[in-house]
Image (cartoon, rainbow, N blue to C red; front, top):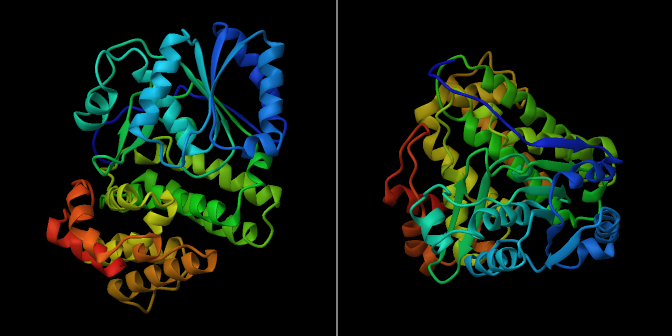
Length: 388
């Protein structure tokens, strides 16, 4: 492994089908006012809301409800939630939902006492918080983002047509997260597979960088194989606890900063997907799926040995009689076939993007430098056009 790095993750996890009871162990550590963050009505229909409310009341908490968090949380909603937290002197924010709720809760935690507009400070200038931060806990109901064990917070500004993520430090990471795989059973199939691809691509973004012999790559390959194996079971049997528990656990380890150690990391698929999402408000995992194959085919010649290794180690392809180029092609073909088997959206046009949007989406795409090739804006547009 090359370079120097540090690793710390302060989030405490409670995992399993009886894990919600451990909320009783965490609540006494915080003050009396809890801001309960959630999205639509699904947690009320499946009973999770009632279970959480009951535990909060048993622990004597005053509950400030913050509902209506959308799949792509907006800057306006962030400002609304920050005001709610500040005016109610909230002591703890609990997100009950998927990655969007967790991202939003972390955004609120650093925005409630921010002395200026949080969008400008955190998502345009990428500054760090210099104000009071409200602690966050998560009760996860969808596996995918890994937001339950990292400092990431992605916010969309519809007015500016921008969707931007800020990865905050460990002081913003959730203090605890509760992961019950059964809470994910009621997800519609489309949301489940979008989350599965989000997991897989998080790993790819870290894997497809660097040329050294890196322990992180071996870990990444094992995680990718686990995702592929369990996903094929879950799409046939969505309530298979073993498969769904493995998917949930892999999602957490895919983006809790562990496998990025010693890596430059890429993240251009996310930059492309988030720019598409800013224009279409499409499901995050689907935007990633739609741009992935064109992007990886573009950068493959610059990281050919890693793509050849990907074919052998992740997809089990016998590459002994192949050139690196042939192996790399076979690996991406296997990946694309798996994606189609899951039923992922493979074109941004199917998500609402049009040819007239391409210039705007290209402009909104942040170009990063950690992968095998630094794209030009013309190449960004080419990837988007091939995905249209």
